[in-house]
Image (tube, rainbow over all chains, first blue to last red):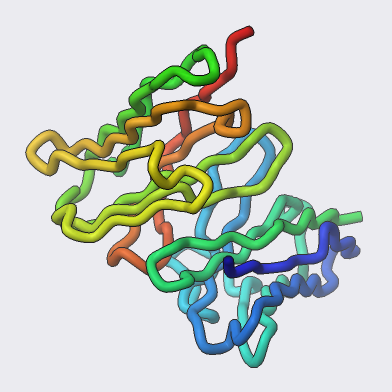
Length: 106
Length: 119
């Protein structure tokens, strides 16, 4: 079965840039989606089709996808960005989520 | 207002069955594919099952294939998940989520309903 691997945690200082990777076999051939989940809340879509932002998502969220790795970048990270982040892709008709990354803003 | 409201969770003995429901409002339900995604306590997200807008296409995670059945009733704006032969590893918070097409982004999620194992 298809697998997506993320680092368990990323730490970033306020105002700095956080980068979260998502690795999978030939991931660049698929669209990647990113979700933010804060404690006790439902996930929220922050990036779709590799690099598009839904309405209402701040411009500091951006994404890229090439080769075997997709990356979510949070520029000018704020304390309210502290959350778990999950990448997601489709393997034919099966949804696959990444292992998740906890972003801590120190 | 956009709403997805899950229900039907609760205490269940392993081996028994449970049916989850998701009531949609605030959008044209039959314009969207729908999915179930679960999250065990302290764990990550796991896609469980999805169904196309008209029910013609559907699929399941290997972990639930043969035990769970997804369905929808567009006249009632509702999504369902029939869960049979429940296992301890099925105990989780179950979210319903919509996607514009089957294999696209989950652009809106409900608040979830919890399925817990009873002793």
